[in-house]
Length: 84
Image (tube, rainbow, N blue to C red; front, side, top):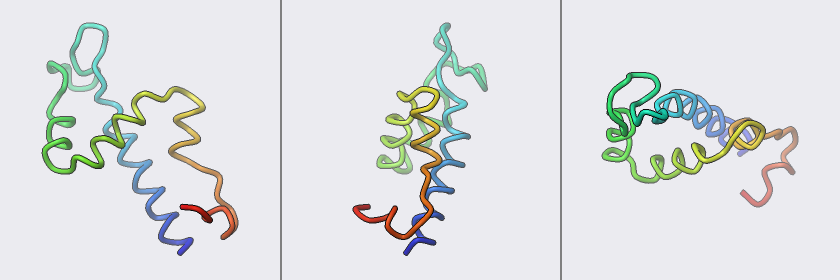
């Protein structure tokens, strides 16, 4: 079970690192592809998997340490996975 949660955590963090680079800037354009926000990354994600889209929206609202803890939780023992 621990391996499955670790795999999920790794996948989610990698995916978030790609998607969150496509946030809108102050000018309303995507800071990565410079197209009007929401860019194709966000619209494609919303069209293909609404649940993952909502998760990425939640993560986009976090900053610094909060985002790091959400993406890279410290899970060392099986007990760390209790309640998931």
